[in-house]
Image (cartoon, rainbow, N blue to C red):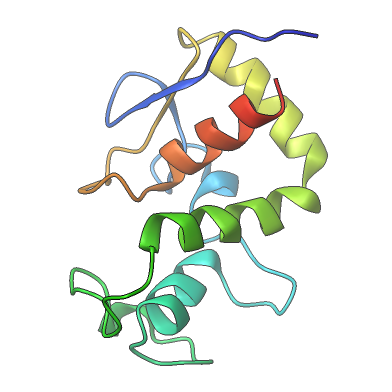
Length: 126
């Protein structure tokens, strides 16, 4: 089945954050090890507390290892999460359709954000 392309924006779409549907917030979405996507991203990928949980150490700071492709590594975290949350992902497509096929993250300050990651993943499975 061919689905319309899903877009992302800071505002105006189906809100994928703690201010909207927090199932799709990196701060609350849990990985198989029990840590959140935000903890994996800030602690492990950006390198501020490897293996730890203090994600606030890295928030707003550049990665300690600048050779990493932050977007690809962040996207992969969401891909892992989506593999065990297929039903939520299907529902997200339905919600996006009701919001002009747009997902939003009002807290996004860069292109590395959950709305963009989830839109990318939904488009991969269209």
